[in-house]
Image (cartoon, rainbow, N blue to C red; front, side, top):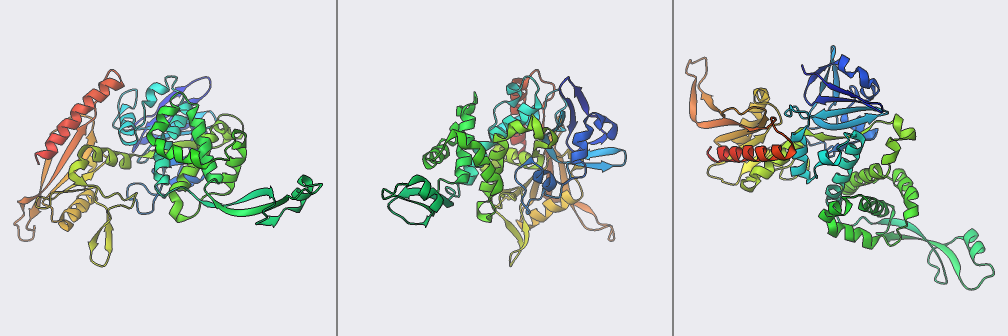
Amino acid sequence: MQKGMVIQGTEMTELKIKDNALISKRFFDGISNVTEKIIDKTLEQLEQEGVFIFPKLIKDAEDISKDQVILQSFNDCYRSSNVMGFLGYGKERLVIESRFSTGICDYFFQYLLECVLSFPNILELNTDSNQDSLMFNLLLFLFPHYLKEAMRKGLFKTYIQNQYNDGNVKGSIDIPRHVRKNTPFIGNVAYNQREFSYDNYLMQLIRHTIEFIKKKPYGNNLLQKTKDEVSLVVGTTNGYEFFDRRKVIAENIKNPIRHAYYREYRALQRLCIMILQHEKHQIGPGMRQIHGILFDGSWIWEEYINLLIGSDFHHPMNKGRKGAQRLFARNVGLIYPDFISHEVDNRIIVDAKYKPCENIKGSDYQQLLAYMFRFDAKKGIYLYPQNQGVENIELRMNSGSTYENNVCPRDDIMVFKCGLTIPNEVANYEDFKVKIKKSEEDLKLECSSI
């Protein structure tokens, strides 16, 4: 059972805990309001109440689901789940760090965000340890990712109501406006026309978010990652006016994107609203609202492993519904192996596990062996993070049975456990990066020798 670390200040009380930990309830006394808001609630419920979940919840996802509980009551303890991030309510903050970071700072979580999502060093950006600023920066850093994802579907286009006052009447006449503007009559008619347009309430919301980010010290560098998408949005929203921001936000809150085809735009819409309304979490009604951002540890670990070995492996993605495989004919038995090697004659299946070596057991073995059997692979590898360097573990599949008393290990089917050592005895973040690069090289060398 692990302990939480409480930091009390004149303005707020902050509790730091680890993911996948069992923690005594008494450590949560200082943040009882946050705890009450999240205890035994599912991720779907928290998302509806204003917490941002990354990546977005998809029903086919295996590692993180809408029914997952972030903090579950268990006798006289609370059990945290497989998510990391930050939550706030009033003057109370809950920080969930990676269990594989044992130092004062969670360098490992920061490093994963930097590698997978190209986040800058959030630790240096928040030297005052202000978790509200940290949460807000995380939302800003997610914007390029969600903008790029959404605009792969093309610019969002929908019907809008435009007002005109000229002699080319094409819609319904607006009599009160006509009387107000065209008395005495000089040939113009005030009318409204419903038109299909790119310059709509959602694109205006995205434009306001872009302009908001530009004013941040690091804003232009952040938007540089999606300069083509930003140019398209700016070129499309000719009706942009700074003073319309509040009206645009209200219209988007009233009209959330519901069409399944535009689900990426729905996620971007939520993110933009949260960025533009951030101040509400600091004063006024927002102080009584739960807010924050949570990251799926398993997903971010899997994507990090993909950066290390992806050049030699296919990478089906359950959360993106890409590369789906089937166990049986007629589309029966949907599966998403983490990694399938390109080499057909010597096929290897790799499973990325965000858990300690000793917790890889039971159903984990069955899942990997099923994947190996499906793809005629003789070798399987578990890749997991570890705090201390240990030798790889080689497991040979048994043949025979205890009934015939002929159980013996086979030489042709093997499973390996290979850990990436997470450095914790480090002077600073730069020192951490140097040491983990060495761990990465060691891991890749070990995998290539299997």
